[in-house]
Picture 1 (cartoon, one colour):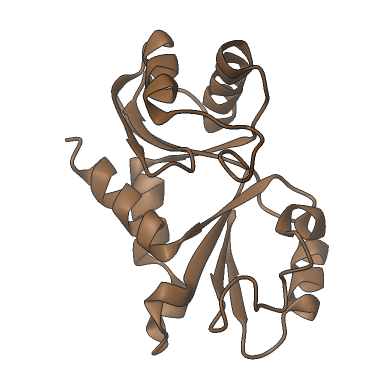
Picture 2 (cartoon, one colour):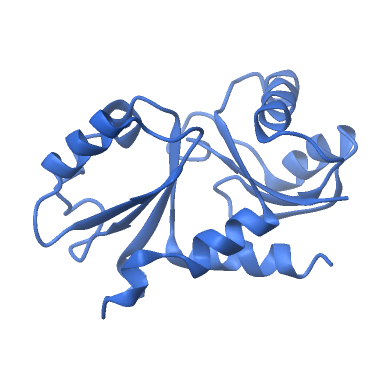
Length: 181
């Protein structure tokens, strides 16, 4: 069975959309997912499931979350191989940058060229962005809240559901997925 990584958007931030990771793991297991592991409290799940398209898998998990938690969350899915390519293909790693300031925005679908141009126009130095397929690689040397994009939510600018993870989380998820042979 293939290994997948699911990233829930907007949970456990502030007082709303709260969930315990042990209950999230149980929710995933009730769908027949195997070897379910979570990473930190922001809704990152590594699991095995039957071969499915990412959209179908997201929909299935989103419906289960509504049933089990009473609220919805956009879910972005990547396969183990896709996440490995995202990590090894990060174009910002070719520059001498502080990796603790790197992030990846995972979009449900590839943003349009017009949306990418809009994002680029809003990104001011010293911030940097690179777009590759469904991913937006971001570098914020002054932190996310000190970035030129802080007041421009990515999902609104790009007109697609997107969730952002810091580089440490991305690489840890890839390592967790690699541990599943």
